[in-house]
Amino acid sequence: MKLEKENEETETEETETEEVETDGEEAEGEETEEEVKENLKNFIQSETKTASIEALDAKLDEMAKELVSKFYAGVEAQRKAAIKGIKVQKNLSDQEVVRKWFTALRERDASTLRAMEKDFLNTDADRDGGYLVPTPLVAEVARFVEEYGIARRDMRYLPFSGAGNSRMLPALASAVQVFWAGQGEKKPSSIPQFKLVEQTLKKLVAICPMSEEMLEDPAIDIIRLLGELFGEAVALEEDRVFFTGEVDSGDQYNGVVVVDDTVEVLVGEDDPTAEKFGNLLADALNRAKFAVPRQVRNKGKFYMNSAYFSLLQRVKDTNGNYLIQNPTADTEGYRIWQRPIELLDVLADDNIAVEGTPVAFYTDLSKTCVYGDKGGLRVKYLTEATVSSAGESPTSINLAEQDMVALRISKRTGYVPLLPSGIAVVRLGTES
Image (cartoon, rainbow, N blue to C red):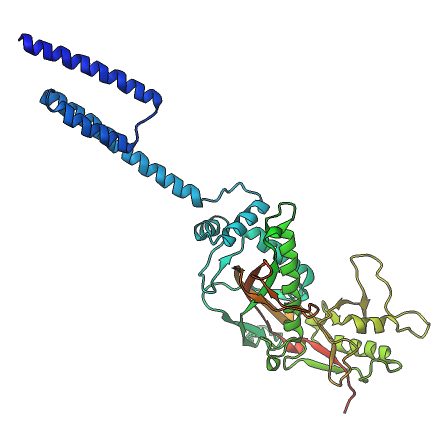
């Protein structure tokens, strides 16, 4: 009995000592998982010789629970760290969102890019490659495209949805027929005659070289800068192809002045420098206005190059007054024959004086043509490509050699003329 009592006192003292040591360790900080394992090993080696079975079981249970708790805590901490690494903060400003997106794009951080697509973008199937552009930048590009682009602004906009890049659209081929019906007589049908026109989207690509410092500089409004650069370039190319493009010359579409079945109006002269050319052009525009259906005529516009508009501005009536007067208000714009004039410099200027050259057209684009696009802008980050120079630049740009980068933005877009007979094209030439 005495021996058992001494053992109990020794066990009590050791337990108290352990408690004191444990308190000290807790004050210094929690044990790591490896420290818990090492303590468990030491405890088993030292205590199995002296401790009772019950005490050993209790201690093992306690340390096992601590080990399991630390294991799950470690897993949860790793999970949170992983999520934090790719989660996008939703309270970022538009500028911060775009710069964060550019940083991830430059570092090829696919996790962050995908997370940003999920949080900020409307994603779709990535068939074209690259990553979707953040909404603030897309909106700015679209704003400048509409500001600079006449096709985007005036044509009827019908966005694409669903699979595929083509669709069939109904085009009005003849007017609705209306009848008077007497009492008791069979009411005749009033059925408009339609035909189907296929609209197909094509990929439009724009490449813009710049320095990384420009993308990183917080003093630069990166959204406005890129929005204007890409927006203006895309608008110019869409206008060129949608109005004057020729498939036979390698363009994706035949433009408004090239498609079949439009109404042709001849000026009566093929030399813009000829005397009275301005008067002949004014007369041709009047005939063009009344050459299209009334539904188109009522809200139509004249579209022409600035050079031919300049010739019109010099035309005087019999009283010596200029035919085209200055606008009475900033919002009114120039007009002739009571209809607005839209300057469209992708049309031929007076330096191209060949018989048959289209110099102007009259139509209501919202009734005769449909513009469409699909999905958002997609971008690729280029670091080693050679970018071809613009016409006025003497050399191409080797990105790697000149320590520059380039953004390659692409989108699906296209147009189709639904009612060519509602388009009157004014051309140089005389009646044969």
